[in-house]
Length: 229
Image 1 (cartoon, rainbow, N blue to C red):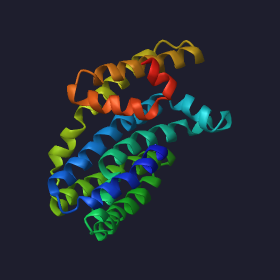
Image 2: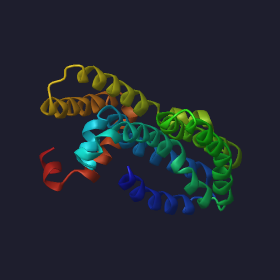
Image 3: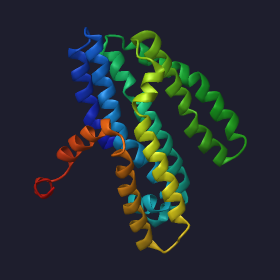
Image 4: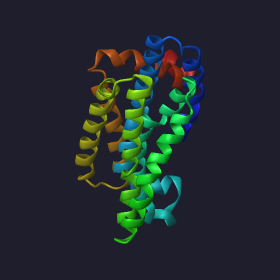
């Protein structure tokens, strides 16, 4: 997720800065980037949440197995945060209003600090889940700021990524079912591969996403693979 955001944020800011006086093109560029990023981020977040044990073992090793739940829930909320909130700061800066980012973080801290203090009294897992899901308040603040200060409607923002959200949720349901057939490590990798195929299969049901998928394929796949395709 960090690799995806780190590679897209500078590009988005540069593009939006050039279009700050053209609201129509500005919004279109923002929505295009949000939609393309959601194609990758949503399935990663849900996938890591479903297969948190495997993800933890690959990323951190066996000695961190007890952290799998933390990594899983953090990945899930991070996917939502990145798609709906992460790029808002770049929008504010591109419009010459960076103070909005500061105010959004301040409003988030007003809710975050009491939530963590209160939840910590109910145990470790209460704190973990509260800290993870309280980020949705941050997303809500950004959506409101984007609507009031920038003029980007909340409904249009949600509608922009609903196909990828539907495909990712459907993939998550399939992955949950496949996990019921516990066949060891080999089956885990097979089920992940099935989920990936299923996800992109669902995406192809939405005509407007085929162009984005083709663009991602050209950008991400090695040249030899693209020639075969």
